[in-house]
Length: 403
Ligand SMILES: Cc1cc2nc3c(=O)[nH]c(=O)nc-3n(C[C@H](O)[C@H](O)[C@H](O)COP(=O)(O)O)c2cc1C
Image (cartoon, rainbow, N blue to C red):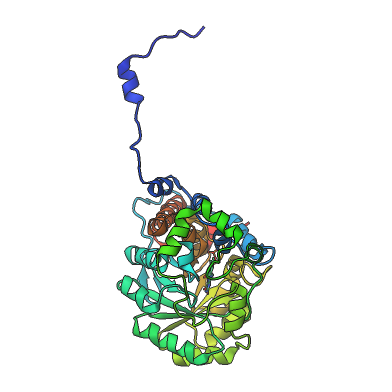
């Protein structure tokens, strides 16, 4: 028989530790989020369905994205022990400049649709954290406004080649004048991918008020209020808008895009050049020969070709082919600091994240993007410590393999 007694008040006082009440609901939600998946769950509740799906979704069966994420789950880490890992340095060098973390913010279009703070919020976090930010051609804040918002941030400009080449040259000139040091040319979008969720949701840019979106508005009043009471949601660099995303891409983008255009961009842009959307070894080798300083292995977050190659699986062969001639970067499917450690151990020179920070943005604007970086940093540092590694440069192929 268990002998029972009444607890003494002093004993109770010792274990009673009420947590401080956080009154701000956004702050409360963000603090509770421990992973990017948690941020995604908050984002889903906070934004209209069509907006969340536009961000979260990919093309057709969404296998490109699914497989890229699964590849990270197949990583097996091989740790070293007894290495003294009390202080960890997460910094790297990306195209000749220091970055405080081994990842950068990928270019994403319509960022003010996810949250009214949009690109400004993201570039401010980039500045604070000492990591690069890539502004998209499809951005909703201008090249100059982004530069002014965060003069100390390292900024890159992502270019889509339009039918109107003169407009492209103008954008490159403006980006250079505003201090962007790297151009990221996206080459995986000769035509729009089939993002079925957007078609089913009837998403238009800017979002239109239909009976369905009106009903949804009742569930997300803050989002609609912000949309209607801040600067109209328009593209900052495009002269056209209206219709679905696919209609817009197919109207503006040039499907004749070829190596001649890459040469034209190389001639027109005096800074560093990264080609984004490389999906095989020969193309990687060829764009480096054509003057790219880095190749970004990416299937556009699974938003273009479905059943596309998985960047993490492609990485070793491209590293072999390119050697020391260019940096090899990687994106698509990154959802944790451990994913980034794995890619860096397997030889990537830099990683980009897209949805991870957009989930944060949708969950809580700038504070949400900051939370995303904080989560990734904690995961990154812990994974490095458990691997027995103190510097990014000390990560080796032997630390991570694909099962
Ligand atoms: C909502 C959204 C919009 C995007 N817009 C662009 C864009 O305008 N230009 C571009 O080159 N890539 C764009 N991308 C692709 C990202 O730059 C990046 O390749 C991708 O998000 C990486 O995959 P991840 O989301 O799994 O991190 C977009 C991605 C998302 C999710």
